[in-house]
Amino acid sequence: MGTIRGKARWAAGALMTICAVLACAGCAPQAADSAKAENSHESPIASVDFTWSPDSDCSMCHADEAKSLQDSTFPAAVHEREAVECATCHGDESKLSAAHEGALPDSEMPTRLKSTAVAEQVCLDCHDDAAALAQATAGSTALVDSEGTAANPHALPDSEDHEGISCSDCHKMHTSDPVDKTAMNACLSCHHEGVFECYTCHE
Picture 1: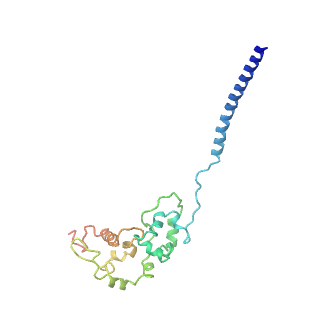
Picture 2: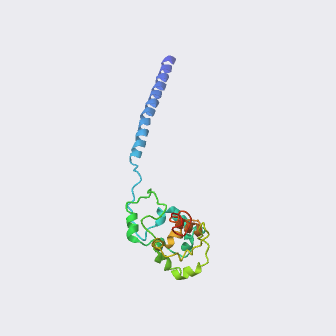
Picture 3: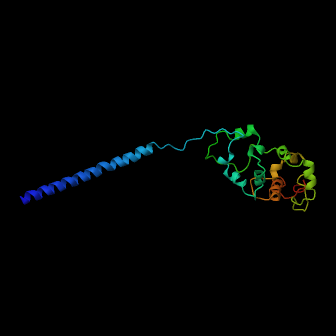
């Protein structure tokens, strides 16, 4: 009798063990399949259907420029304190619309304006007129070439090349570089030998 009970207990234990193994084996693939099913519903980052307008939130993509509005070492911060919006200065709507065509959140941000520019009149609408600015900087030594020749940054000698220079070529709003550096860099883009007087470098 004891032997029969022992065998019965052994058989019951073996049966329970087999059931447990089968249950685990049956569950494991289902868990994996479940994870795969969940992952199959995951979709890649959706492309944003973006169309630029003057009311767009520029900070969504132009994070560095947005940060410059909050940093007092950047000239743009002065505009922020005066509640000047991006579209006040960046107002060339047709070119800005074209420049943003096909733009996505992960698109590479340009380091400088290429197809658009801030018109000089936009600056003069808020700041002094050209004559007043020229008078204010008559004794400026911000622009001095390697020969010691100083140039008034707001009254450059008349030339075809100088006609194309605008305020934003020298006054970079979204950089902490001082204006004398950014202005001189603008000069040196043409006066590559660091000499302002023409026809002195190449005979």
